[in-house]
Amino acid sequence: MGNLNIAVVGTPGYAGTVGKKGTVTDMTFYDHKAGTDSFTLIEPSKYPEKLSSLFYSVAMSEFCILVVDKIDSFLGETIVMVDSLGIDKGFIILRNYIQPEQLAPILAGTCLEHYEYREEDPIKMREELIAMAKAAAKQPGEGSCGSCPVDSHFNVKGVGTVVLGSVIDGYFRKHDKMKVFPINREVILKSIQKHDIDADDGVKGDHVGLALRGIESDELDRGYVLTTDASVKMSRSVSGKSSLVKYWPTPLKEGMVLHLGHWMQMVPCRVTAVDDGSDFRQAQVALEMDSDMIHKPGDRAILMYLEGGKLRVLGSIILPRPRFLSRDHRVPHWGQAPSAPSGTLQRGHCPVSSASAASTLIWRVYKTAKTRTNVIMTMDAAPDAITWVLTSEPPVSITTAMIRAIRTTIMAMPQRAMSFVLMDDESNRSYNYIDESPDRYGYMWYAIT
Image 1 (cartoon, one colour):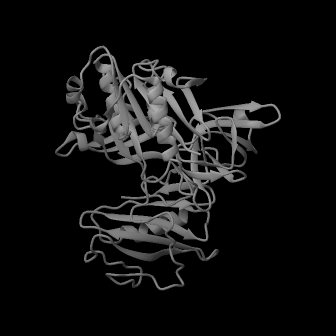
Image 2 (cartoon, helix red, strand yellow):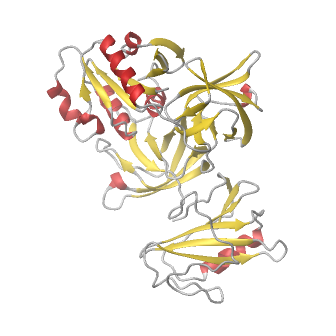
Image 3 (cartoon, helix red, strand yellow):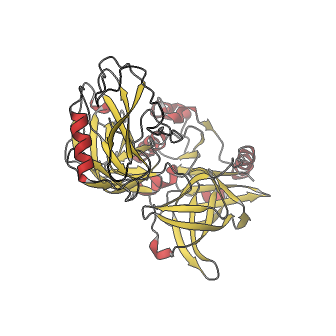
């Protein structure tokens, strides 16, 4: 059973000539089935009035059809959005005698410059898209590790709570236990439907209806995420190198209110710090969000400025991730010999001056007297910075005394750049040593640079 999610952007209306009209919100869905194979066309029906309509349509898709009947600022903004989201496979349909040579300068340097041109023939397009969906048929692997952002939700008599969305990553199966972010509720996946046909699994790219047990529809909202992936987390702040598009004319400024887009979320955020360096399009920035952003470590999010006039898409930034650790990494118990490729672990001191980039030391920085819980610090030392990740074995509720003890120990060590966050796996909170204020994150390690 193959399925393909396709964003149809540029000129509205074309999707209706290829597929059958379905759900309508700020996006309009059109489906076509042939046997067990299908494709879903997603049209941003509220764009250009709502930039979110365009963002959601493209973010949910793996393929894009760009329909061009005029060259204007909205076409330019659409191209920038598709390029920022990295949709590198697609078709282009030209109207009104527009020639490929006219479009080439606009597409140059973007992932759309390699799109293939197609004639406006809905029947041939339908056949080609079905063939692509069939060829792209995906099978779930072992276990369950997938995520589905909520697009819409409602109650169905005799069924209960139903969620509509697209599997954005991985796969999951009927009867799986799933976590609902940001409310951290565990639910049971009772059944899965794809285009009104019962299915045993959902795989990346599938447009699905999910029947849930353990939650009411009014407890959900658009942008919530259902997942079986333990690496999915929540972040309230982001810091790192931004990547602004070449058309963005001015540097980011402290105090600017932007929107950060990821999956089915567009979260308002404020720029709290900017360091332009030698290139303002690669500036180091810090962002504080109004609400939690749900994501996998290291995902790319889109920066948008709704007051930007003719161009509201700024670029992108990488969301927090545990550096130098995969989600399958397990910190060894302190009873085992720690790995120390350079330097020695003596009397609470950890020499770092000779540590090379990508060398990793594991060190016990604190041990509670009452619970005998080991708090583990994984450190990576590079020439210009040190990265720390702290975890505990077993999970323990973090106390102020623990934070102070760890801070005192680490601050006494030699380094040029340092900060740390301590994860509390029980209360799902993290504590930053700078202000000791709690913020909610996921259960995974939180990266520090």
